[in-house]
Length: 206
Ligand code: GRF
Image 1 (cartoon, helix red, strand yellow):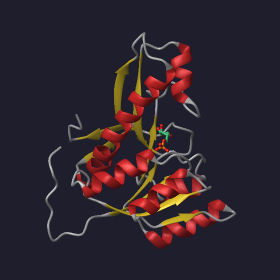
Image 2 (image 1 turned 90 degrees about the horizontal axis):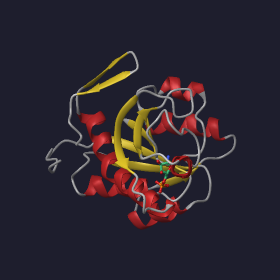
Image 3 (image 1 turned 90 degrees about the vertical axis):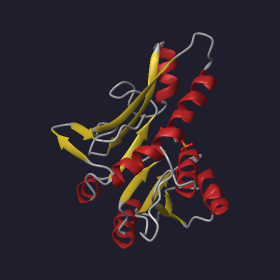
């Protein structure tokens, strides 16, 4: 994707939600600064102390930790922030149906396998130990289930015999960091429609 030139127009504001390392959060912020993703990360939302907070501090992005009960706190926060998109990036909780419903088609998630294979936690390890020859990443809209929402984008990766689990994890994360910002850009600025469960995105993400 080439640089996005939209001078004079304010970028749409998005929020990112994380619980852990925050490497996807950082990749998204960097993409906004490199002109690959026309958006502004208004806030990082976390549910616990995690390394993503350190990244937010370094990157100069506002962050907030959800208070208890986290569902109420999140409902209020999203209503206040009114983001164009809510981007889940390693957020380790299932969103309550009320929030999913209020923000339907505005919440994205990334998952490190080719769904519907290996939903839930530790997907990379599960795929590796299962012995799959092909795995990959999935970016999808969030619905009421766990990793069950309509798929926007998938990228496959062949698992080489000589890779150990760590090498596979590194390759998966590389794909995530490359493609998540592009998909977010396409959802924000591109043309797409829903046919049943099928998400038809006009843009060629690559
Ligand atoms: C990623 O592998 C993502 O697919 C999954 O959680 C992980 C988050 O990694 N949902 P990071 O915190 O962005 O480094």
